[in-house]
Picture 1 (cartoon, rainbow, N blue to C red):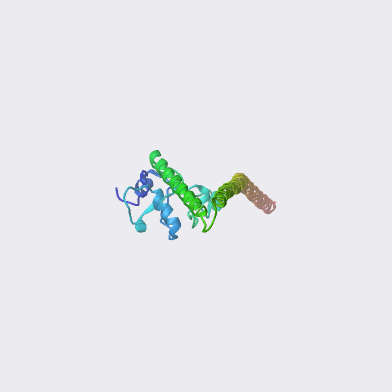
Picture 2 (cartoon, rainbow, N blue to C red; picture 1 turned 45 degrees about the horizontal axis):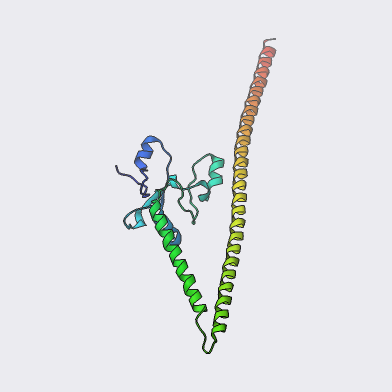
Length: 224
């Protein structure tokens, strides 16, 4: 089948089929920003390298908060059109094999362990004319200092993680409040429109009745 297709490995979205079936889907070109482009390419989960120049990813893979015009679209009750420059696909993506994640984690862990060991070896290198006692004390102090530094870094990272988590919760709650407010505005707008239509119909009826009464009175006066 011809037509625009989504390049996410497991996605079957096709513009012609969507049009025939009445399915609302948009297809987005790959971004120009290198870092964002790399993320898009990686998340397509294609086994072979590909040129993203003429490829597309469909709207099924983007959360609402990735659109610039999300609020405007919700007010108009339409589908959002414009992605943010930093938008990253996050929905309905192919799963990464568990063994791949495990191997990657092991490699990262080994790399970090190697870095720590090399750092310790440099710190513990014997200094010229140093006595065995000095070397031993220096080695112990260096190890203790290194452990203390790692603990401090861990605490700082943990505090940052907690702060970011709290910020995410606040943003999530704010988004829910904004959504509720938008829904209320849409409902109020519909009610106002209905009220305006009703008022206009009532006014038209009164004008018509007034004209009719005036015409009947004029006819009656002419007859008598």
